[in-house]
Amino acid sequence: AVLHYPAFNSGGIYGSVLAMRPMFELLQSAGVEMLLSGHEHIYERFAPQRADGTADPLRGMRQFVVGTGGHELNPLGPPLAHSEFRTNATWGVLRLRLLEGSYGWQFVPVGGSAPVDAGARIDRGADGPRERGSGEDGAREARRGVPGTREARRRGHGEARREARRRRYAGRAYARES
Image 1 (spheres, rainbow, N blue to C red):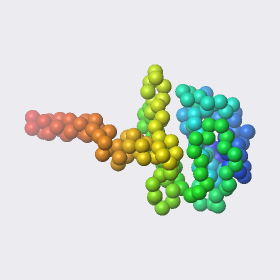
Image 2: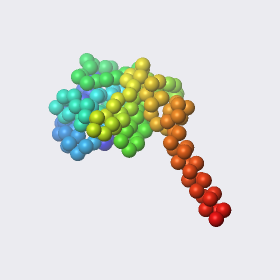
Image 3: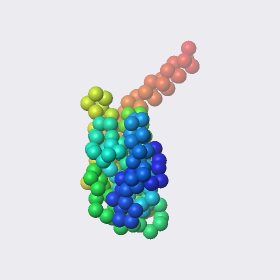
Image 4: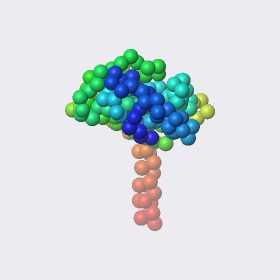
């Protein structure tokens, strides 16, 4: 989901917009896993949580504040609970990879340099979701684990897809010969 005003935000100018908490609760109760917002000119990622601000790693909603599109960056205030990563040091974009049962993210600074924040949430069924990567230290690890990235392809994560493609083409060749 996308909302302009963030329900949670530890930026130093605007802060959290409490009027967005009922919408946060509605989206979270409907099963939305991720909320993108802006308004504050910083980048911040929160752990999955409920509208009342309590952590909920299984059914909570992760919120990203991505207000780094070019306007002057705002100062950071004191970090809120469950704020996992935040920066006001660079403009940039949030690159998302959305797959059935999982998603990955990378905050990429302007100019295309290495992501300063990256990670992934992978659905593990009855065991609950599993997180990969966190902040600057986890950016490289997370890129390796997000299916479809160059690092993942080098490590063989695309092997099943390549095998399916090989079988599909082999079936077409067989059909032409018949």
